[in-house]
Length: 230
Image 1: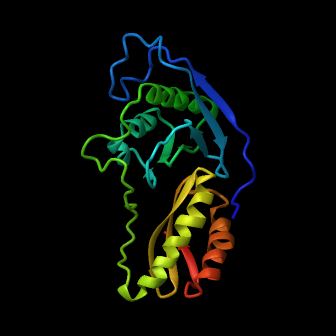
Image 2 (image 1 turned 120 degrees about the vertical axis):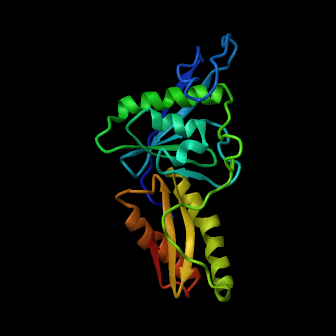
Image 3 (image 1 turned 60 degrees about the vertical axis):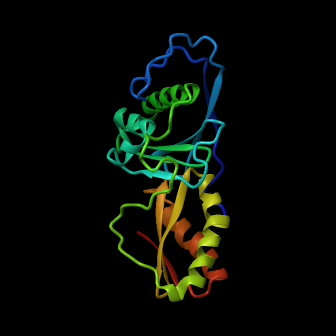
């Protein structure tokens, strides 16, 4: 399943002089950074024109992903909090090997991209902690979207099939585009999903949801009649 056209890549590097954003990350600048190795970060556009995907060349999240739709949610992570503190940041998402950053409406991406890169280079060259202690570090957290639903135990087999498809077919595909799609519930033939990262607010997300994901899941799980975003 493909949800976007191929993306050209940019590469940013740093020999790591004294980090300008070390304070924002909650760390003191190292007294001697001359021996910190060169680091490269790849930058990819996404189907969402407001979002860029940054690949540091290393694991970001050991399992799952973590979505920060606003500055309040970002308080669990010094890096996410610092990215929001730049200003003009509308969303941050941590994937397995990437970080997606969404710009606020009207933001200048070239300027914002430079600040994001500085933060990311400092974070990874300093090996700074991704989460604060006691903040469910590295755990995928259910979205706080106001969607109140408890699955019916009688639907357990159907739900297991849906979740397996999401994990093996859907989520890896959308991760290539800097986003994620998370299960939120199933009820009377309707499957409810949450769009995260580059998928959130993407102009093509509705098409991807209906023509791609809904078609795929209905083919393998005929009990599903429709797929809705919440």
